[in-house]
Image (cartoon, rainbow, N blue to C red; front, side, top):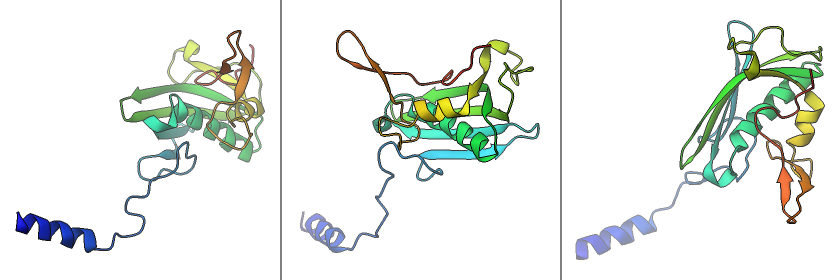
Length: 170
């Protein structure tokens, strides 16, 4: 027992390295760090590949909304007004969500002429401004957070998010 007590005192007296237990704040939107955030790359066939990770505390669909926001953000940075969303998939667990979305920036407001997955119902074209507005939170400064859309008949706040956000009508 004395050995355990001495060991506990010794461990407790050791300084903790700064940052070793730090985790990104809830609803963190930024480059992937400590298993939270997004990672982007370009595929051989020219599509943007956005991978996003979130934790349970970030809420449902936060990784999906972050990936969609990142696709719109990258399209806007490239001078495009629209972004074609080509397929995506998500994995959810009790710990969080992992999402991959494929996107292609465009200046044409039409349904994609070809769908990366070969399934036209899995693709759509989104207005970059609409995606960024809908997924910027109530303050407009929270990327990846669904903004309030309306109040339902029971007084609850309703948000719209997920795959399909910002879709233009064909």
